[in-house]
Length: 394
Ligand SMILES: Cc1ncc(C[n+]2csc(CCOP(=O)(O)OP(=O)(O)O)c2C)c(N)n1
Ligand SMILES: [Mg+2]
Image (cartoon, rainbow, N blue to C red):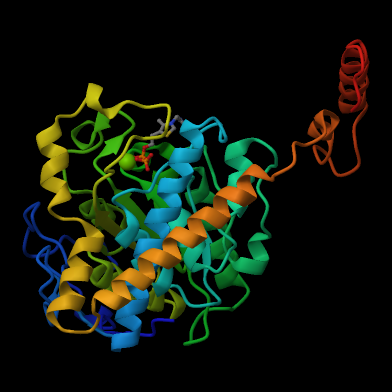
């Protein structure tokens, strides 16, 4: 869908050069790229502190498409949380509040680009055209993840914090070595991770390798302010995007609750990468409105007024306000999107409930490509154990 134009190609104008020399002006922590205010007012263009100019130029149809994406991914996510509460999923990691960061970056990807997600990127998965049912096998505990990363250019979910940034770096180095960068049809890579992950060794190693090999990668950090119960101030003493300068590549902070700005910044960073200009760190400044996962109770470590303050910056409300003010959409459109979201959520629920339980012994399949005596022995042991139950069929 959205092919909105982005400016941001002015890499030559960057004040934080590839040498890692600090920018002349030190930004304060309030600096971020924003193109749509929480009240739904458009900002035509924004110049980041390094001189890069960001703007978008979407058609009305494309604006409505972004709104539809945001509403759909929120509704499917809410259904997933309800399914977990009803005992139908083992766990769920909600994206509530992070819809704009995910839809904006997900739609900024070109078809040839490769994404490496964490466990929370259901909105990016949706934008990649993957059937939303796919991650549910994982969270219901009935399969090991269902999609082919190469078919959709979207890798498997990664639970090990930060590990996917190294996988993405290796993949991006391979892209460059294969000569698949350098033009508009070049391939770029995006690695998603969180504010907590930014403190992991893996992530810092990924930054170094990407920098020195000039890998075509965008590090997309969704700073949702928490790593489970640990707040941001336990991860860093400086804004996360500023870390990039120490590694020798540009960093930019974007309003992660603004789908337009997130799109513009990510698209520009990806295009720089595909043209051979190396990595960028994008810090999407956002907020995890829900629990870390359904196993977590955030009321134990954060106060209601903080959540309320972020509610006023809701990523969907501001797009709705903009569409209404600009008469790009009317009540009939909003009602139609709500109805579609409801129907898709119902369909998702039905399909989750129909997911068959796996055969217990399938646990031992696909551990090694050619089997192993150890695994065979474990399978035999398990089979005997299951046989010990009266009427057991497996
Ligand atoms: C290597 C590793 N250490 C610890 C954990 C446990 N763990 C799961 S999620 C999480 C916090 C991650 O926070 P952040 O990177 O901010 O991502 P978010 O969940 O907020 O999206 C931790 C510590 C893990 N999965 N992997
Ligand atoms: Mg976090």
